[in-house]
Length: 218
Image (cartoon, rainbow, N blue to C red; front, side, top):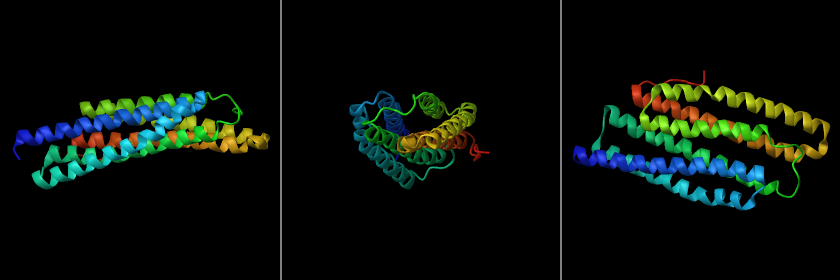
């Protein structure tokens, strides 16, 4: 394979990854919107999009392994392909969490919410911005942006702690709120995990740019 053909194949992979990232970002947005607006149809759209995201993950992984086997890349080329392999895994898991939130919408459709949903949508806004910005940092191979995005995980963790304590207090005072409160706690946990996957991606962006692995969870 010529150098030009190799670069073209990398560009095709890059476009597929961006398509996957966009689908995941949309799934997160729709899942939270479905929860807040109690929109069952929107929740079903998120669930229906999951096989498409999974198929893209498998296609990208297969294409990456094929290029590595045929071209035996080194240096920056190898780091880029290795980063793609890691990114699609994290993106696929983010999509799974969005599906879990959409399924929670299904479960909570019958009853009014025990409290207004304020902190969960706020947490989701931070998470969605992190996902969008980390994809942009990947495109730009921007090490500094990746470090800044990962630092926002602290904000998400604080919001999760607030939601956790508020819901535990509510469930302690009102036993009728236990079932719904547990589901809402899980939604917050799904969002917190998505932010953790963003941090993983940021570490790989730095690796792609510098060749050095960094632990941004410290």
